[in-house]
Image (tube, rainbow, N blue to C red; front, side):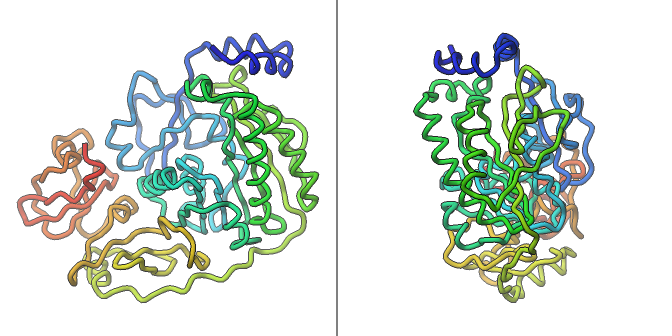
Length: 429
């Protein structure tokens, strides 16, 4: 049962389309996934169907299947993501080499979508204010083989003060009343109230103000929600433009959004295969490059140098940073991160332990290959055993990259007859 106040407002809001809207909410929802270009060639899977029109790597899939249980999901080959939720990144239009901030990034769907379009080139700051959700974000960054991301757990105001004018593009997928998710999540219905809408609108205004400071002159700010409430959508954008005259709306037609005023676009469940979503594209007036001071890199330890030479691993452009005995490869152009709550400052390489180097799971997922690889079929007994944390037969010696078909999934360490399992205990099935 949908809230009466919500239904009354939607009737006034939609007019003649109201009955079509209600009928759409009664239909089974479409489910979708997004392939990860950072993992290489896109596999042909029997349960994957039509392309999502606004995302080249997005596809609807047969709901009878459970792709979250497939080994390819563990390997970061795809991300399960609602189709309409892929649209704000299409409006943002990330490009390789840009400096981009996803200010409200958990659980990571849009962040990893941005990262895929960046192709590992450029700098991506992804932030989440909630500590538990920030950890989920960090894990998804790792699973999806993202190497150029800084993951932080900060209030947006802290980042706005620290990194003002440092980003070409900023995405604010704001916390909202979630009306567009009523068909997907029962909790969104039970948690809804008129007061919640007003509370969200107030919070969104604060986040938008912070995001505005991060954008360089000439840069783009995309604001999105998954709600239908005008207070959180068109009215929020209008209020922002009134209080931030340095911004202007970017207008343009798309075949999948219903365009409105002030660069706003809506997605309606009765007009497409997806849930409700809203997006607005705003541009900061002027034209100036992002100004920042890159982090000072450190000298990599000899243990890593020996390990990397043996396996023929080259992390590419960037610089080394350490947190205790754990080493990361920071993306090129990452700013100073001292005194920030940082969960992941780039690609985790591994840890120095008693004069030896133990490679990180993140490094395995990022690698397309190395000098010592053990490949198993994705549907093989060996991969099943590996995901359970068991030893698997192999003639490899030393550190070895384990792959399911062509996709890296973790590390093993061989003695010539078996691989000792180094798949993380928290991920084992």
